[in-house]
Amino acid sequence: MARTALLTMSMRELDRLNTIEAVADGKLRTSTAAQRLELSKRQVNRLVKRYRTEGNTAVISHQRGQRGHRQLAPGLASMALAIIRDRYPDFGPTLACEKLRECHGIVLAKETVR
Picture 1 (cartoon, helix red, strand yellow):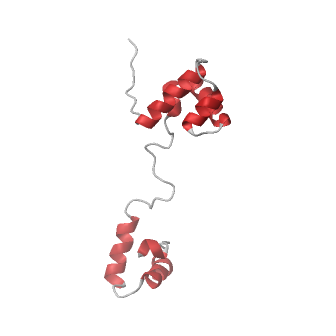
Picture 2 (spheres, one colour; picture 1 turned 90 degrees about the horizontal axis):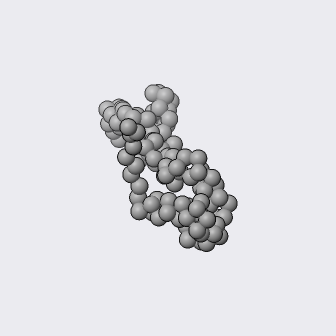
Picture 3 (cartoon, helix red, strand yellow; picture 1 turned 90 degrees about the vertical axis):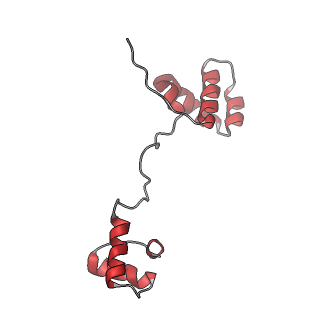
């Protein structure tokens, strides 16, 4: 017996899947699908190609479930905040940021420290 995986999609992704299926089946033109999805015809063709190889998961973002590229390492913010509160409570964000970099090797932007 084949196992099926549970696939969670937003309404927008479900609409995109229905449109891409229609293009793959020849029921809808690429240009019409591009207008409907607010994409270029090239991107619709890429999605159709990916749909044919991957199936329904082709329309779901591959970034789902991954941390953001600009996200701080876990615990870094709390560690920096603890150091600032202990040693530099009266410093402004710019000076505190410089001291973190010089004395502790923690590189953060002044707006992050703020």
